[in-house]
Structure formats: C-alpha cells, structure tokens
Amino acid sequence: MKRLFVVMIAFLMVFGLSAQTITVLHSGDTKFISTTHFTKVEELLRKDYPNVKVLWNKIDMSDGSTLTMDAMLAAGEAPNIYLDTAVRISKYMVPEYALPLNNLIRDLNKFIPGCLDSYYINGKLLGVPVTGSGQGMAINLDMMKEIGFTVKDDWTVSDFLKMAELVKQKYGGKKWATGMFAQNQSGDYLINNWFASFGVKWYENGNYNKTTIAKNGGAKVYEFYQLLNNKGYIPPNSATLNDDDYVIQWAKGDLAATAFFESWVKSYFETVVKQGLIDKPFEYKFVPFPRADGVSKVGTYYSGSVAVVHKTGTKTDEVAARLVEYLNNYDTEKLFSLEIGIVADKAGVPYPLNPRVAEVAKIIADNGIHDFGLTDRRFTERRSLQFPILQQVLNNKLTPEEAIKKFETALNSVK
Picture 1 (cartoon, rainbow, N blue to C red):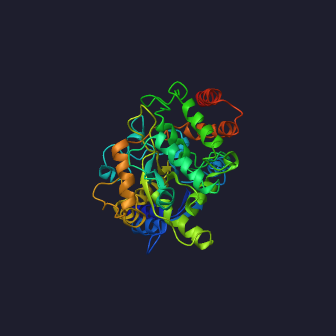
Picture 2: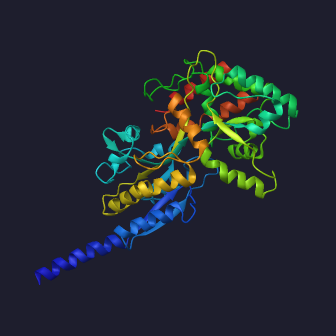
Picture 3: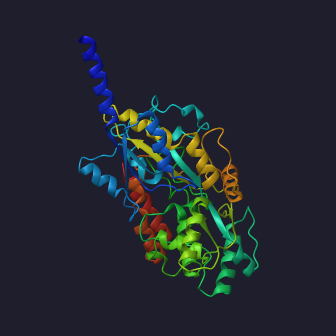
C-alpha cells in the first residue's frame, strides 16, 4: 500500500505539472518558410512536457510603452514569460520579479562571450536575449543615382548635409534627406543614433545612476535636429509624426538615408508594394551613421528581444525556463540566421547569407555599440521623457541648450 501511495503521489505531481498553462506576453511571432518561431518552440517544448499548454498573448504596442504588462500586473495576472524588446523589458529585470536562470538554461555556455554580461544583475541571470540586431543607416541607392552623390562607408556629417541639400534641390520637398518623428517614444532608437554621430555619451563607464548627456555635448544633436528641420531636410511635420510614418516613408523611397534594420526590410517592402504605393523596391545598402568632426567611430544602436521569467516558486518556473531556452536554441537561431538574416549570438550557428546583414555586422565590428542603458531597470521609464522635449526642439520652442539640460534633468530624476 505504501508503494502504491508513493506511485500515486509521483503521478499526481507529473500530471499537475503537465496540465498547467504557460502564459507568454510577447510583441509578435516571426514567420519562417515552413513554420513560425512560436510553433517551433512549442514543438520542442512538447517533447519534454507533452501536455503543457502555451498561451501566447500579444502586447498593445500602440504607444511603445509597457501598458499591457503593467495592466496584467495590476490585475494580479503576471505572465510566466515576458518576451519583448530590451527597451521595454529591462523594467522587469529586477530580483523582486525575475527568476534567476543561471541553473535552468542548459546551453548558456553556447553563447558568444560577452553576450550575456549585461543580463546578470548581482550575479543572477535575470533575462536572456532571444533575437536582435544592430541598425545601420540605410542608403537609398536609387536616389543617390538621381542626385549624383556617392555615400562612402566612412562619411561625415558634412558629407551628409551636402547630400541633404542635393535631395532638397532635386525633389523640392516631396522627398527628404532623412526621417524624424516625435509623436511618442515608440521607435526612438531610430533617431537616437545621432547622439553617437556627435560622440555624445549618455552614461559614463556603465554608471546608469547619472546621465552626462548635456555635459558630453548633447546640445549639438538638438542643434543638428533644428538645422534639419529649418532647412527642409526632414518632413515639415516631423514633430507630429510617429515611427510608423517614418518606416513607411522609408519603404516608399521618400527618405534618402535613415536608420533601419535589415530584418524589417522584406515585410515593409511587401506592405508598400501591396498597397500600390510603389511598383517595386529600390536598391539600398547599409553604412554607419555619419560622424561629426572629432569623432572617429560611430557606434550603432543594438536592440532585440529579451525573455524574462516571472518567479512563482512552483514547478511552472522550470517549464517556463525551458521554453525560454527553446526560444533561442541552436535550431531556432539557425532559422533566424538563414531565413531572417539576424546574426546569431550562439557559437556554431551558420552565418546569414544576406549581404546587407554582412554590412550591418561590419558596422558593429568596426564601430561598436553605443550604450543607451537598455538593460538598466530605469530605461523604460526614462525613454518616455524625451519625445515631449523633442517636439519643442523641432518646433523651435526651446534652444538646444535649454532642451538638453531639461532632458538631462528629467533622466536624472528617475532613481
């Protein structure tokens, strides 16, 4: 009877675990040729836990904030896994919320050295990168031919402004040198890379407790933005545009040189062609952002998805951690590399075949990554502070010096 009792208890433990549902709050699935990212992950997970159900809930990305996650927490319905861009998820990479994954993810030794460093908080791995890529400045080569300008891989802000004037003269305000937007915080990484062009560090030596954005010359960036606006080098209503407007302008061929991610290109080209906005995609290439006088290298903005597991103290944590492992194991990374063109962060994964990805990889290798404090817990709150100030900059209601000091004060007010 005692042996039967033990067997029954073991059965109930396994059944209780396998009957559970893992909830994942995410920012979107990825389609591959024969499957999707989430479908592949579920197939792998079912081999270990055959009866566990995964419930995928997509976040509301209308304003680029963490409103969905915040609402779920307020309702006492925290998801087991939060999978989202690093610019939002760092808010939850804190010991009070996140499950340490050090001893639960089985292939941590496969990550390229350094990839996980910023995800360790006091020795605990509180998040795992899933997919990501650096951005480059995408050059519309068709427009360059029409204006008679050649963009070098190592170009300067002065070169950029010469190109901008040629675009203005050629298209008379119907196309622009670059894009700009300030309606809300969403997509701010597409324009923040200009700080790197002017050698402006947001933080010194990884100290995220205090920004030095004004001390390090941030006013030069806002002065540059006002120049672009006043010269007509960006859309005239940029203060009220958002990042969706920006990416469609790029895909239509209305912007000569602007920040973009290669992994976005295919879907946005398909969208504008399907809508009849263009007949066919234009030719393009990636180069670094241009550098101002005295700047030798312009680091790029690197962003990607990160998975954080909510610690519950139950057996569900083990299943959630396994799902996170499969979100970024060899098999899924290989699909992202060969079909989407995202450079893997695991050793041994085949390198992307896409030459545009190679251009972005070279930008990262040659120039590095600019540190905007993405993995600091305060990043999400801090990034909401710039766009109201940027609107005033673009509308010439604040001087560059006033604006950057106001921004620095706002950043440092978040403790």
